[in-house]
Amino acid sequence: MSLGKDADIILNMVLAEREIVFRPRDVYIVEKRMRRLVLRVIQFAMQNSKKPSLNILSNNFLRSIVQLSCPLNFENMTNWLFVLYTLNFSLWYPKSTKQWQVRGFTGFYGLGVALKRAVLEGIKIWDPVYYTRITEDEMKYIFRSDNGIEIPFLNKRRNILHQVGSVLLQKYEGTFANCIDLCEGNSTDLIKLLAKEFETYRDVGEYKYMEVPLNSGSPEDLEIRGSLLWIIKRVYQETELMIKKHLHLKPSLSEILQYVPFLVNNFVFAYRRTFERELMENTPFHNIITEQY
Image (cartoon, helix red, strand yellow):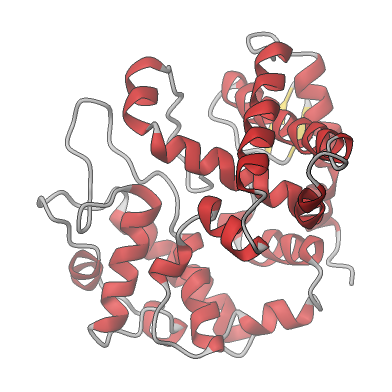
């Protein structure tokens, strides 16, 4: 499947990462710390390798998306997930200020809980026929918080829902499931389709006169994000090599070899959630306002 020039830039990610990582001005990678992360992932996998099935192991590091599942059929749940991930950006306010939260959850989980609550209340938030016409007041109700704080960029999110919903209705018979079917299970083709058809997923910027698949707030932002992508890829590779090296000690690790990228990605996510307070207090995170993340 070919979706044309507009989306092909996504496939240049490796070249963009190399450009950013090997010729940075302000950001560099500490190799020793990266190897330490690999060891933490391996340690986690080995500690859990005695568990009887991969599913049980997976539940220890999976993002708790199961807790957010709704009483919907496959097609509607697919549409609900599309809404969830489309709206999953910049869910924070500046440090030392009150944060938007729903039933005690902030960020991605707060968003998921709010969308699940809407479904349970009979609101068809998964349906583009509904959300292409959604009003500001309806948005405020759906994303109402525990503490009276409004969800960040409420009207920006409303406009995005109008845009993506219109595309689904005009070109995909009102369901994101048709986008998935069109790509025949190929994740790369799905990424290309998202970037081509939905402007909010078109994450492109310019770094040192080279167009790269990152939306820039500044060169520093591009360097941080590009370096992060490179690190995660390296951690995938090093983790896989180390698992293979230790298979004679832990044969059960062979079960997770095909899931290494999945394991690393979700381990990092879970680590971030577990140590959120310590990390927020001691780590200088960069906060960039963007609809891409």
